[in-house]
Image 1 (cartoon, rainbow, N blue to C red):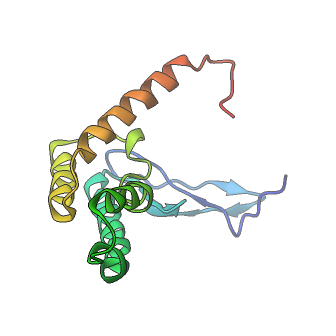
Image 2 (image 1 turned 180 degrees about the vertical axis):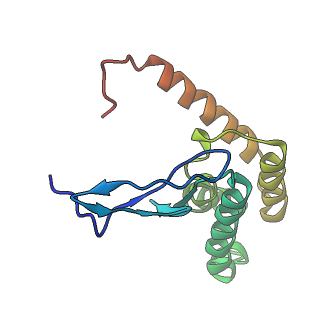
Length: 147
């Protein structure tokens, strides 16, 4: 596998900003403070609330796109709307949420989103997924790679 020094970026995650000079094939690798990876913004400092707000905003935009055609359609029942929400909107809102630590402010962001879109128990669902994730991690032994 070849690693391109021009395309490679590095990020140091610490409580205080820290600069480092990594070299690959004699070239210094660019250090970044934020990096977007798989739709999630990783940052070198604690910026978890902003990421949660971004995900809720993405979910709200997706819900807004189908507002007239699905949510306000009299022919589509509340049960069907709930299923659409669980399969389309909720995954956008809570993507990778089970792997993060929850602060009270982050829980409140999810509660506000629940109220706005008239759906309940997102916070409980995320908590349960976090418990499942922790159980999964604790089952992995040190000499086994997760596939």
